[in-house]
Image (cartoon, rainbow, N blue to C red; front, side, top):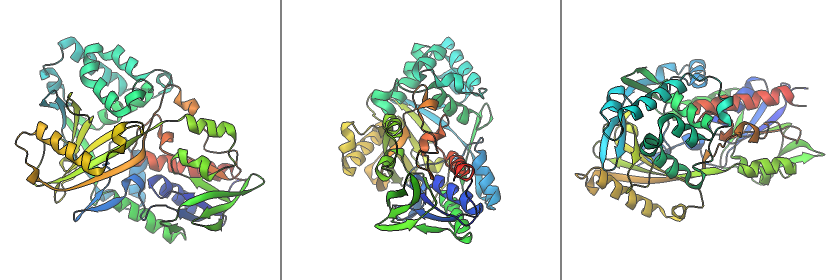
Amino acid sequence: MPLVPGQKVAVIGAGPMGLACAYALASAGCRVSIYESDDRVGGMSAFFDFDGLPLERYYHFVCKPDKALFDVLDEFGLADRLRWRQTDMGFYYEGRMYRWGRPDCLLRFPHLNLIDKMRYALHVMYTQRISDWRALDRIEATAWLRKWVGERAYAVLWQRLFDLKFYEHAHQLSAAWIGTRIKRVALSRRNLFQEELGYLEGGSQVLLDAYAARLQSLGARIFLSTPVDRIVTREGIVTGVDAAGEIQEADAVFSTVPLKYVPRIAPDLTEAERAKIASIENIGVVCVLLKLSRPFTGYFWMNVNDSRLEIPGIIEYTNLNPLAANVVYFPYYMPKSHPKWQWDDHQFIEEVTAYAKQIRPDWAESDVKATYVARYEFAQTVCGPGFYDELPPMETSIRGFYMADTAYYYPEDRSISESIGVGRKLAETGISHAT
């Protein structure tokens, strides 16, 4: 029988997925408690004080297909906080900056021939019309791209991005995963010559605060700095959680933290479930933020293919969201096996400063007003061919325990909208299947 109003449920994690899951459960009449190990809600979208500027630790943006987000903004009365802005994309290739993302820019790009350019354009047009990704789920991404655009275009446009984000996993990705990324951005255009992306006035914190207020109005409780150490069971049935050394009763538990944490807090999982979780790889991110005295480029997003620069791209966030200061994110994606994962913050800041000087020879260190380094171990799931079948079900063998994390976005890529959608689905799974 399903969960009924009045039953106690625990949600682990207060990122957008956890908040969305908790809100759906509270709206169904459950008595919800949310446990978050951080000292604030938000997860990867949480804000911090960046030298007096409230800012997200990791960059987020809104695309036109983000329906789950739009639905929540409408429900919460926040639709008027959504701003759309014309943005430009750049491409830094072997020492030179090029404007990118438009047909005329592609035609003028000197490092591909006309046939390469036609194949590239046809691939984008084909991909943005795909609605069923099941066939591409079984196909390896880099082979799929090379087949469409050719070896030369792949080497110029794609290879460095894969190598500097996935390293030894670069050829272990599903074509469905990269295809949805291409489609999401392609559909965020007003026309062939104008990209249009969105942001929330006040940042993602506006949405996080609205979720927290709604949850509290429904009687939900949010416990910050309170990690869950163990899911408590009796005869294979959830009875509560051990949170910061105290047992809290619960009729059901919903985990939204990274799957890799789950076997530790849910020791009653079966060996098959543990094996599925262990088989899923993740890429970490070290994101270096610079607060600048002047704009760095004219681009919001700039892909990078330069043998001297070991980053796949640069995100100049204030070319999307005009804040009180110029902010640029330099993301380093890498598995924990990479030697740089052990670097301290100063080493990353030093290298990024050197990169900035290479890209902009007129750059001076005095232009940097503040720096910050954010790290997250589970930034990107390695979604390989056949990933649909690799994901364990949200409903586990422990009666009353349900789990999901960002891997369940698949084949879509990371976004707050996908977090909301998966959080709702997780709650619906529990509401319809709980006993």
